[in-house]
Image (cartoon, rainbow, N blue to C red; front, side, top):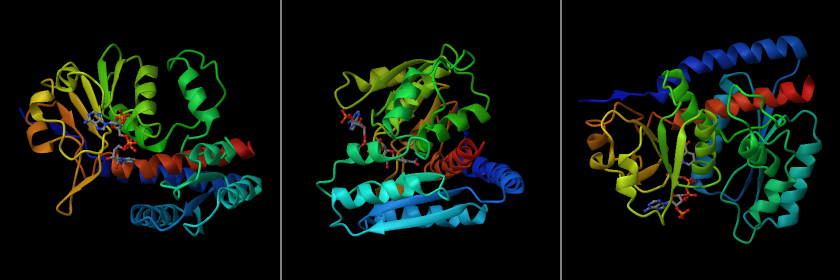
Amino acid sequence: MSATILSGSELAKEMRQEIEADVAEFVGQHSFTPTVAIVRAGEDPASVSYSNALEKSFGARGLGFQLHTLPDIASQQEIEELVSQLNANATIHGIMIQEPLPRGIDEAVIKDALSSDKDVDGVHPVNTGRLAQAAPTGRPAMVGPFFAPATPSGGMEILKRNSVNLQGKHAVVVGRSTIVGKPMALLLLRENATVSLCHSQTADLPGMCRTADVLCAAVGRANMIKGSWIKPGAFVIDFGVNFVEGVMVGDVDFEEAKEVAGMITPVPGGTGPMTNIMLMKNVIAAARRQTE
Ligand code: NDP
């Protein structure tokens, strides 16, 4: 069996048109442009290339983009002051703090300093808390509006747009970071999947993975999840971004896995392109929320 390849690049192409239409409608109604501010302290190469990519994609869709950089010797207070200036700036609707922050900076305090209404990558405790407390989709939410992190939201969008019914399915998420694995588990739970969240201390990880109808990998270890770990016909979402001899690969051994899985996202061209799309959607939603 050879899996259906779930192309995030193709889906992102489709969704870019939806975003352009949303931006045009928003600007027509409000006469200003939803704008994101990216905060970076230092010149981490992956962060630099990510903010360059964001600038290009936001600009191409007609969204506003500002990059605010500080040197890697920036103090906690300088970063917090920049965040509070951006919070108070009514022309900025979304703020994203790039990680890693310089050594010695307390990331939790910086996330706390963000306005939760502008926290378009869903890292502020109000947003993470509301995601954790939100009732399953379809029931009254029981919490105020919130933003979920862009990367897992992109994975969910791939599942949704490929009509994957999650109800009652066993979803296994490998990786429990606050930005990918944990929110992915909560998003799957909201869609009525039964969720197992695995990590480096999980006993018999291959055995756990083999029980997954939906397997999501957010580990950061090249090709770790083997074909023999995958239940035949499973849906596999690979968030991993790793480089082996200069070639980008995921956390899932794609060549093996595609012979067993029912559907699988490739790396590159899977979850990666969807992250920008979901961030843009959140910036438009933030601008609406602040305006309407
Ligand atoms: P983190 O390093 O923050 O978290 C990694 C998680 O994997 C941890 O929970 C860790 O467990 C777990 N883990 C590590 N080794 C093992 C192992 N041998 N077996 C089981 N679990 C293990 O990573 P992120 O969540 O930030 O990123 C994960 C991957 O996703 C990376 O490749 C990253 O580059 C990629 N990524 C992709 C994005 C995209 O747009 N597609 C965006 C953001 C990240 P423990 O908690 O026990 O330490």
